[in-house]
Length: 374
Image (cartoon, rainbow, N blue to C red; front, side):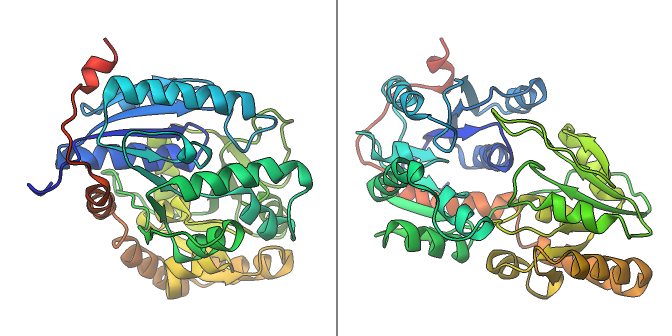
């Protein structure tokens, strides 16, 4: 971190449900090189044991947990209010230089430190992309809370221009914004030969990921299709998929092994603000077949094949052609690998450090990561 940057301590929120957790852990890990300490405050389902172990390995991070419902869950508002009081108490104890929210509603709290909101998705843009039109009136309170939070923040960060445009379309023009693409580093993996299967990873219960369409396309393919991720939405029934191999929710190290072995990665997403799982697959040398939506084209350009998200026949045809054309599959995998090299956690962290610097205050702060847990 440059000598002119006052930011040394960040209070960051996260959840343990999906990609936001991966993003937060990677960013915290990379911020250590810049001398930044982080109190990582979780809401929603409690972290799993392997997720707690990830945090325990980070010397610059203190994990504080809560089970307050997230703003996109059913009837969350009492929990959102209680979480707000809890977060303000954390701020008083930790005295951070800046607040980094990976949600929206708490941007409107009376923070002492300046606030950055990182936008990962939102219900209104999800609804328009996945179901068409606007959500029903019971989501009006969510809309108002997100709008107030966004306009209460000092800076709004989105991982793609497409996501930023969606936010402004639904919640109004935002005064200070910046696009910072997500990053991911590939762990050291043993060299293994690519195997004949198609992989997809994510919250399988989320209609945006469109796993059901991939499962229907899988029935006519000569290769197996393997899906990794949860089939159980928080607070809802488990979803079932036929014609595919379900791998369940895997620890990160095991999941990387599947990326390393998969020849093709398919994500016919209807909605994906960035797509960390796509970046992981590309970094592991998979050929990419993706939903034809603006955000994925923005990130991957000519390094992927695109299909209309709900066209089962086109998805099946594209996958079958790629399965039978080894040379084209190899070319696409190389393009994806080269493109993935642009999206590292070190580059992401550098841009966030610059963003934090814009928010920094001149007044001195006190307290340490260790102190908040005492």
